[in-house]
Amino acid sequence: MPQTRPATAPLAPPSALSLEERLVLANTVMTERLDEAAVAYEVNTAHIPVEPVDLADVVTVPLTPTLRPQSSPDSAAAVLRRAHHRLLTGGWCAGTFQSEDGALCLFGAIRSESHRDLRLEMSAMAVLLEAIRRQFGDRFDSVPAFNDAPVHRDGRVPLRILGQAADLAHARGL
Image (cartoon, rainbow, N blue to C red; front, side):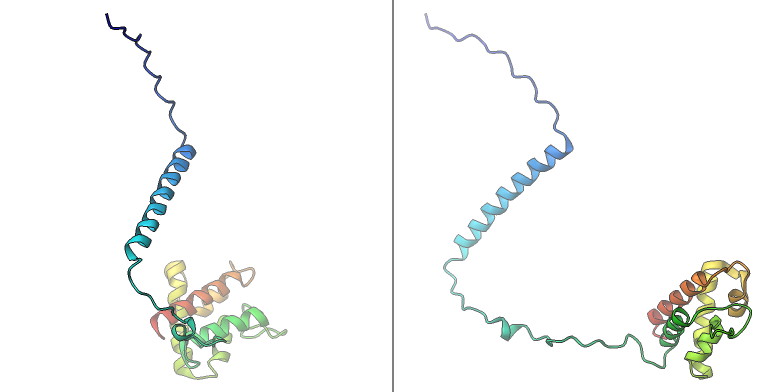
């Protein structure tokens, strides 16, 4: 009579793997597959003759990159950026065109940086008013009304809106 082995008890189901353990397992499997693919690529392309490439012939960038202005100096975007910089460095004021210490209001900074070019000034003011209305709705009917609003204790909000207006003008190519 043939001898039969006693039946072994079935293995207990493995405990569920944690997310981290599953990720490690998946990473290991994928690394193995990538290694096999790399070897297969080398074997399949070994017969193709390849000449060495001199990178100096391929890469043709200047050694020292040159910065180009993002917008022309006579654009509304450039006026708004210069006005923003002027208020950052010289200060912002409310209730007057220019304070005793030289700080300017939004309108004063734009007028100063447009060099009294009325076309540029009006274009920059229109974009600034649009940026103000995007943020605050129709609450303010003009840039000076926004500038002199009592809610501005410091120049952070007006400067932020001025920067947004510069970005808006640049995006529109103004």
